[in-house]
Length: 301
Image 1 (tube, rainbow, N blue to C red):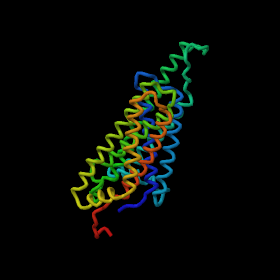
Image 2 (spheres, helix red, strand yellow):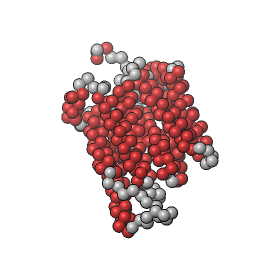
Image 3 (spheres, helix red, strand yellow):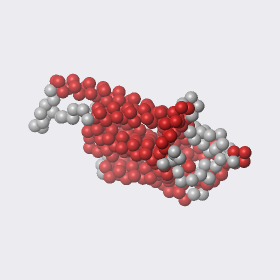
Image 4 (tube, rainbow, N blue to C red):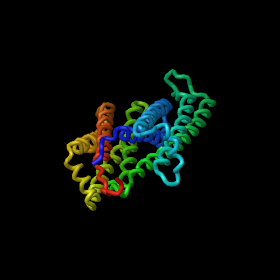
């Protein structure tokens, strides 16, 4: 079995949350309702902080962090090299987003004694909206490519539990789930009702897909002795059932309650769901590393 790989757990989960926030901002910006500039600024700032923490955590996994740049020499054959490249490009794209966020005109509403928006402000606002939508899209695509590259590192023939599409799908589901929930928390009252509903539906969909995917994934593991060992470890681990409760069952119940009952105090429930799902994903990622059973080839040692 594997070990508690805390640097990798923090790098993958925090990095996926960061990219998920940018992705959700992009989706909201492409919708009918305009993305609130305050949410854009806050989302960019929080995603950048999380991305920086993720990259910092990844350095603790390297035996020689100062030599990390050498991995870029193997782009044609190494998913690790591609991961490093895409995350560097994502961070550079984020810097552009941050620069945009520092030069945005704050939305001002008409009426109620507030100074009306001028024609020049409307034109400038439209141009800025087009620019930051492009920036969000580029950053999202680069980030998703980085996440996919991270997952492909683990698709290894010598680890049957990982040698499938599971790692890629699990990483992307974490991105969508936590990205949507954290954006909901950051958005608060600045989100329109349709935008909140979209993010809640995305969170619910990712939770359901994640649960169903694990059922399918578990059935696939039984096809090999090592895979069966991984599945047996998971199902007999108390951590797995804590993860299932925090990351699947409780969020499912709460998200359905929020969507069905518009009168409930959504802010507190959304924060609760976000914390539960976040803990569930961290435990799920820890179990991902702990449950890995490789094919023993003595010639390698």
